Image (cartoon, rainbow, N blue to C red; front, side, top):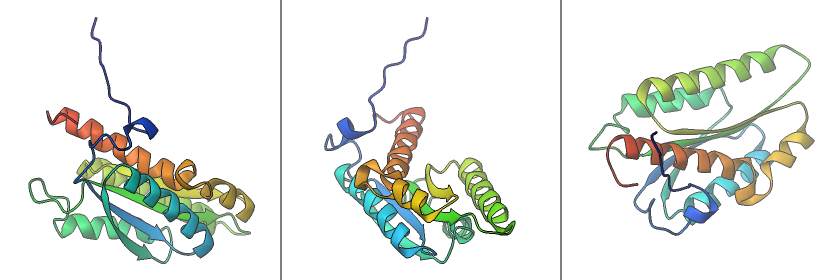
Length: 171
C-alpha cells in the first residue's frame, strides 16, 4: 500500500514560508469592473497571505485571458530556469444575456485557458465566474480570501505545490 502525505495548501499554509519567492501572474478581465475588483481583492489577499508576489495584467473581457497567457508563454515568461511566473490566477465574469454570446464566451475562454495550462504545464487557478445574474456574481466574488478570487489563488498554489513535488522540490 502506498501512503502519500501532503502538506495542505490553504489557510494553514499561509505564513509557513513555502511560497515565499513564488511569483503569480494575475490576468483580470475588467468587463464588470466592480465584480473584478472583488475578485482581485480576494486573490491578492490570498497571494499576500502566502508570502508570494504578483503582477496584474488587465484585459477587457474573459475571451482575452487565454490570449494573454499564450503571449506570456510565447515570450518565455514560464520557461524553466528563467521563469518570471510560477503560476496564473485568471479572474473575470461572464453573465448570461439574451443571446448565445454567453455560451461562446464561456466555452471558449475556459477551453483555451485550460488547453494552454495543460499543454504548457502551467498552474492556473481559474476564477472566471459564469453566472446568470449580477447578484450571483457578487455573491461569489465578495468575501475577500473566502470568495472565488481567493479560491482561484488557492487552486493556483495547490497546483504549484503539486508541480514542485513532481519535480522533486521540497514544497
